[in-house]
Image (cartoon, rainbow, N blue to C red; front, side):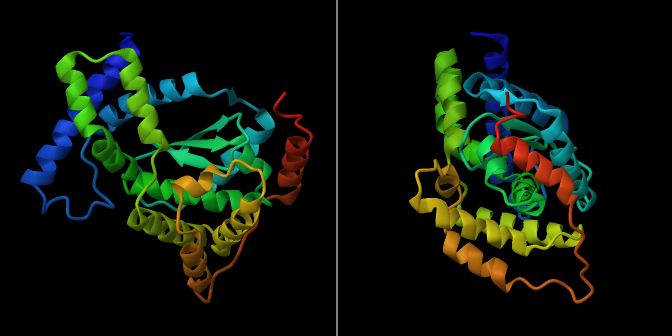
Length: 270
């Protein structure tokens, strides 16, 4: 077993032990699960790095200066609207046509090329990233990790485990979906964050409408599998009202249009 997988196994086992202990011993302290975490920042980063290594073994990634400029500007702006300073958000572009994005631990967000290709503008992409930031700020991945692989990891630790087992466990967590409450909280967080940094929250609803219309195409809409209940979420975004003094500040359209042209012609990904 490689050192990376061994470290992941140990960290996950420690995490799960802590999760069960604090869930049952100090339930009242963790009543507000949206804002509290149960592992240290250092441990979270180690686990995030181990999971990152597994993701890199499964997907090809892209490092494009042109795309990085646009994505950096989006994340930097969103970061300024977050009161907590626990994370510095960063992204990895995955060279895959799925219209999707997901977040793990430690402020890490993974953006599929297909999401960039099918975003109409920077505001639409920002709305999806704001939603993923909501999952991170609410520690949803930690809870999902504990729920999905608690029993399997305990068995793996007891039996010594193996590299294939740990890899499959990690991939099962990455592929599973959040529950309705977690998705609703992440949507609400995203709309509030977008408003705070002067991005129109309706961009999130426009994105939902777009992927719903694309559902009849041949696209690999993995986003639907991991983000269910699209109709009700569109309705909630439509009913969200910004403050009267809200002032929208759009991203640089020339920069985004250049990126869109490059993506369309598959230039930046060569």
